[in-house]
Length: 344
Image (cartoon, rainbow, N blue to C red):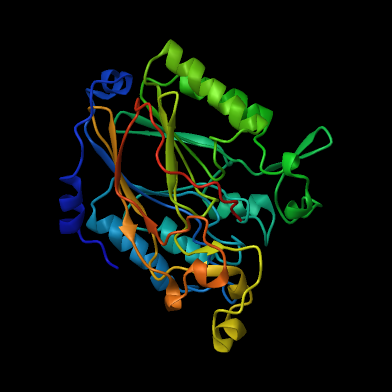
């Protein structure tokens, strides 16, 4: 399913006018900012389907057609950054500026420093300013081993899925301190990008939201939205005036139990295909930050690859092969539909 510039502009016509909000007071002087976001491409040849360059090129073509200012991927882009450097080069070398978030699987096949180099980063947390907005990228891939924070990677000495839940996908304390400083020092509204979600009830998510809350009390509208991948689902909610947007995978949804829905030739070609329900469309979203305080999400609808939906294998729980169009108001009191599905 190709989204053309014409269809994108048509979707923009459905934007609901944003009411006066704290965000509007901060962002009212800014021009609309349009960018593209994708998550969880999971390029892993011979393991997951859609392991070809065309899948990525379709995502980049959509970004070009929408004339976005930049594109950002929210982690789990590859599984071995050094080995898959050619695939990464296609992303990093796009005609559109690109930015990277490190996901928990990006370090699977190598040491963390190799991943940083392949992603053109000096460290996993950083920020950049564009058109009177500040984008803050977090690295949520530390393990708490005893009292030490150890970054995921081949050299780390542990297997991430064998860690207790409270030890997985942590933020380094220095990173939390930095987050507070970079928000406080910003002159612009902030959008926070991470791989794991920040709207949960774990200690790090609560710590991050405390930082958001304090910033918005001191400077109304300072933190506008947090975006994440990891969960392979499409959901959003608004908490304390901050929109939380979970971006669906560009490739598939992982299911915990192996299934036999795909034909034998697929199983022979892709080692973990019996652990996923794949999409037939490389999903992405074009997001527009509007000066009035609104956030427009222009998503896209696909379908399930090979005509095999999750219901066929007894696993649905709200899984969709889509990212819905929506307009999020940063100060909206209600919650949108959401899904509490565990990610990879």
